[in-house]
Image 1 (cartoon, rainbow, N blue to C red):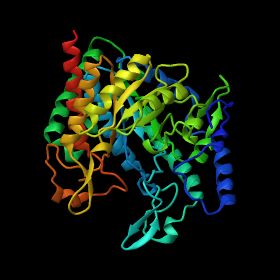
Image 2 (cartoon, rainbow, N blue to C red; image 1 turned 60 degrees about the vertical axis):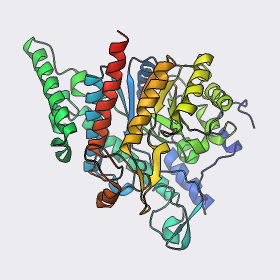
Image 3 (spheres, rainbow, N blue to C red; image 1 turned 45 degrees about the vertical axis):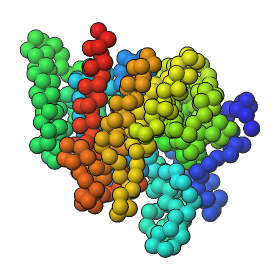
Image 4 (spheres, rainbow, N blue to C red; image 1 turned 30 degrees about the vertical axis):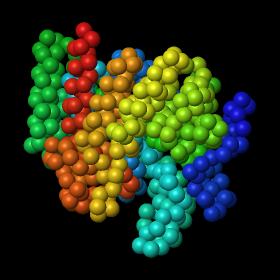
Length: 454
C-alpha cells in the first residue's frame, strides 16, 4: 500500500508494522492506550518547533547536533542522580564542542522514552531455555523467566510516567540554575577530574569563568537566559506505534499534528521500509524525524523515503543518521551523500559511530573499540568535506556512570577489564571520560576545518 491516502494518526494501522510486541491480551492493550491518550503531552508543539529551527541551523553548518544517552533506559535507573550524571556529561560535551569548536550545540538526549528496543529475533536462548526476547522495559522484563518476558501493555503506562518524571527533572536542572555557565566546574565528575580529559576540561572551564567575569566587570548582564539556562530536547526510537499514536496531539495554534512523546523521534534500520507503518505514521507529524541508514540501504529507496518524510524539503525536519561501521563507511556513505546532494535535499547529516562497530569478546560480552568509534567519526567528517556537504551532528550511546563497556580511550580499558563494571541492559556505552575525549577530538576537527576555510 502506498502513502497517497489522506493521513490520520491511526492510518499506520493499514500498513505492515514490524517490531511490534505480540501482546497476549488485546483488550488490555486498548485499555492501556486509552489511558495514555487521555494523559497530558510530555512535550509541547512550541518546543518542537524550537528544535526544528535549531536543526535547520545544523543543516546549514551554523550549529552542531549532539544527540546522546542510554541505549535502552531502564525503569530502575529513573533516579535524580542517574539523570543528573548523564545530563552533566552532555553539558560538558556541549561546552567543549561549543567553546572549543566554535559553534552553537543542539542538545538532544536519548532520554525520557528510550524504553523499547528492536530485536533481530522474537526469541532468544538463555541458559538453554528459549524465551521471548527482551524488548525494553516498556514491553517486558529483562529477567530470564517466561513470566517476566510476557509483554504487558501496562508497562507502556508506567513508561509514560517514568518519561514524565524524567522530563520534570530535566526541566528543573536545565531551567533552575544547574545548567548555568558559571557552574561549569561543578559538572566535572569525580572519576574524570584527574584524567587528561578532566584536566583539559578544567582549563576550558577556567577560561569560560574568566569570560563571564569579564562581562560582569564591564557591566553586561550575566543573568540572561543564554547564560543561566540550557535548551535541552528529548528523543527516542519510535518503535511502539500504539504508544506514539496515543501521544499524538493537534496543536491548537496551527492545527498541525505533533507526536508529543518527545521533541524528536527516529526510525531505526529495521523499521524504515518505504511501505511500512512507521514511515506512514511519521509522514504526518510535524516533529523533526531521524532515520538510521546503514550499509544495506538502497539509494533510490532513501531518496523516496526523504520525499515521503519531508515533502516540503523543510530544513531541520529530517536528520539522516549514518551508522556504517569503520570498515564500510567510505564505500557506503560517499555515494549516498553524493546522490542526495544532487537531489538538493535539505538534511542534517549525523554520525552514529556506535552501532556498526559492535563485536563480542572471547568471554561473550558485547563491546566497541574507542579507536574504531573515533575513526568512523573522522571518516564521516572527511567524506562530507570532500563532497562539500555539512557534517551536522553526532549520535552516541553514553552514560554518566563510570562503566567499563567500551574498550580503549585514555584509560585504555581492555577486554579483560570489561567485567569490572559492565551494567548495560543492551548495547555497550561510552563512559563520561570516553565521551569527553571524543568531544575534544570532534571540537578539534570542527576547528581545523573552520581555520582551513577562512
